[in-house]
Amino acid sequence: MHFQLEEATIQDIQNAFESGELTAKALVLLYLNRIANYDKEGLTINSVLEINPDALFIAEALDNERQNQGSRGPMHGIPVLLKDNINTGDALHTSAGSLALANSYAIQDAYIVEKLREAGAIILGKANMTEFANFMTDGMPSGYSSRGGQVLNPYNISTPTGGSSSGSAVAVACSFCTVAVGTETSGSILNPGNLSSTVGIKPTVGLISRSGILPLSYSQDTAGPMARTVTDAVLLLNALLGDDVNDSAMGANKGKRRMDYTTYLDKHGLNGARIGIPRDYYFEELTEEQLAIFNKAVESMRQQGAVIVESANIKTCREIIYSSVVFNEFKSALNMYLSRLGPHAPIHSLKEIIDFNHNHPIETLKYGQSTLIETEFTTTGKLTEPNYIRDKTRDLQTCQTDGIDATMKEFELDALLFPADFGATVTSRAGYPSIVVPAGYTAAGVPFGVTFSAMAYSEPTLIKLAYSLEQHTQIRKAPSLKSFL
Image (cartoon, rainbow, N blue to C red; front, side, top):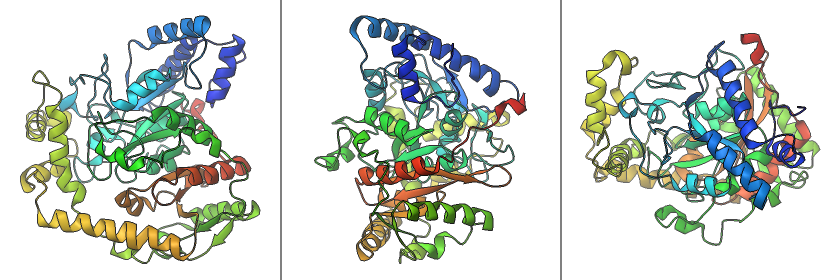
């Protein structure tokens, strides 16, 4: 067999399917063996939390369907890993990395999982994640969960993985799956995407459904694609689209959502684009090495005809301080989610999670549960706290109206460009989209990316820019896993 699994794109796989060189069943077996060899042995990268016992049967059925009826489309037979907070109504658990929810099964698929199955994707399993999307305690490292253990960064094991979609990002980087789905509240797609040299699309909140995903925040949560190429990320994004009447956030996308985002994969997308760089504030923590990588990416954009607007500063950036919005929304959102699991679910509330952890401290409380306790006992869960209401109002004003909106209008920009995921706080509170793409590596081999961001439902523009940069730089390289064996 000439097919090469490592770094294989969706198109590579579809070509192998069409030529008869590969079947979906054989592909699943290749991924499973790679997971066994590199994720569970050797260095124990630990990005894959659970394998779907039905994956091979699903693959065989899809092979049979392809032979007798033809392909459903680009995702037919493509193995996908899901972050462990995304419901699947099958033999897989949905635990958000928590041992308290280790025996918790969802009653039905999340809406986006339904769409993936309709597109012919194979749910390969669940990816490890930072427990409760890094809302468990202070001082817990990114990529750690009591149920899954610590995810390691395959490029440099002394470097963090980023949170909380760490398993999704690392599994993609290591070719343990073709593509994966992560979720973001504030940087949880962009941050691990940056640190694993992968492409992460954090969509506008409301572009794709949030139903059936264990939540952190009503205001900011969204799922999104993680892939090794912009094209694959966009193909996965297409498969996640749909009209979910049970998600009220989706009502705002009417007339703004596109049916096929691959039409925006324009190699010349940077030509003539006005890209603003908020040099004030967002660059203060960069090392000289990281700044050099960023500036090299900017120079590549200039060479492709982009108009770079320096010092397109977000005037409200220093006003974007601590917000109690997520802190107050978590208890209400989590309890609502748990209540929908039904009376036979092992855990029914945040309080029961805290009690479970308290009764199993050695297994569950390596880093404590201070955030869970504080949320449970200092918020009402009714969202009536004055500070919550004021913070929510302030977030929208400083991040949307007076922040990104005002900056883009003042400088007539198509997009803003941030180093790594450093703009995640302002974009997430605004509910606005971003795409992180690889930009280079430090001398220690640590990946560094750049993030394009813009106003609501500007995914077409961001895809053009990200794809054009990727095609002209071709900077991404696979991690060298063999040295770990």
